[in-house]
Length: 398
Picture (cartoon, one colour):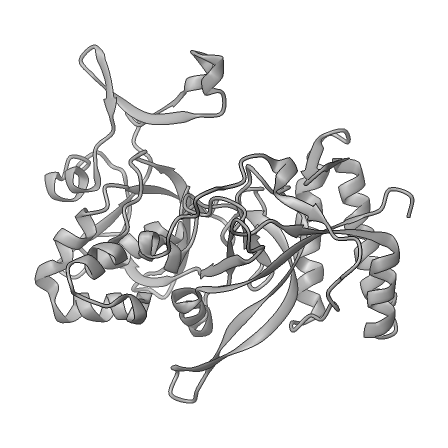
């Protein structure tokens, strides 16, 4: 699962506390979505239809693993997995058979229910951020160039499901280790990176050139590593040490290193490169640490299927139905010939809810998976725009 993590997400994971917390938040799935009865958006999709079909086919693989009567909550309504499967197949059929945009919109209104995300309390707006699959130079052997390891999950990292001990803690868990006869929190990032307590335990998957690259990989939750031979290996999230994420972007702002208006992955990387003396203190401010595993294919979301660039979305899976068809309206960057962002333009498209993230909490947050190319990195590193988010499901009798 891409965990940002638990999988997401670059700019909000980095900036964390740069956005004020809402005073109230939706805590029940029944209140996360409101059925739209009258004013529907005009559906327009800015991407190719092949990528949408691919994302839907991946979704169906997830749904086909479930029992037919597995229930999904769409705001005030519930639908079994069998119906969600039929819904996606119906949408694909409409997509392929509609002669034009007008017919497509007419068919959707006739055959589908539409639900709008509650968004931030009182606004019905959703803050969209992005994440991507980074590519880093690395090696399977350490040397003077490749010095910073990424680790497999250690055997002494325990997952404790608290609901086994007290029913009121059902669904909650902690990560821990055994010390003597006691259960204690697992090691922090600083313990691991500076104390080197995991060295010589045969846990290294690969080594990277820069400790900041390791941190970015951990924030994204998955990535590609290009070896000196040219071979590419993929790694994905396996587990975290259980310590809460603390925003390194917030830390840099509070210490006057960068300003909130100028915050992005690119500015953080640039400042640390120019001021390497602050790197360790900045990275170790965040006690969270992520462990990886090798992947056979592209990054997987929380429903266990490969993510599709531009089509996969991460939202709070406690509130929104997994594998759902989603429609969003937001902003996307325009890239100039020099490779920099020259502006932002409105866009809308269909996506699938295929992932979640440790800081993607509440009905006012969503994270778009952009892919792994240079545009993906810029979009993921700079997107922090508000927009609208809708969920669609076929009417039972259509």
